[in-house]
Length: 102
Image (cartoon, rainbow, N blue to C red; front, side, top):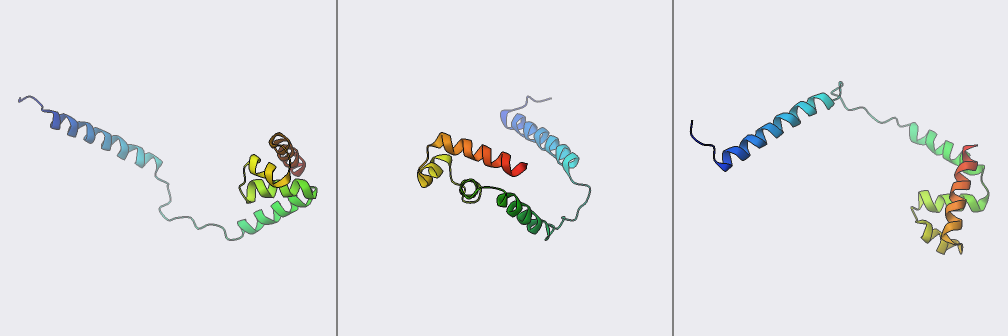
């Protein structure tokens, strides 16, 4: 048997890796081959739930949550927009989330 050169050794490693990935892909493949269509009503329900939860909050807490989660602002950006300290913004976000969950 002739000695294996570096290229053959590398190709053997690639073959092993591909075989391993194929086995993994087969395990992870979903049982249904057809893609599942998203539920068109779910976003509307989610929006209603969010609006209901926001209605429970004070206007200032509502504003902070909207800036944080809808406008995707950082707590430092929110602090600058509301003339508050970043630590206070963090506390108010936690407080507002707790109030909305009650």
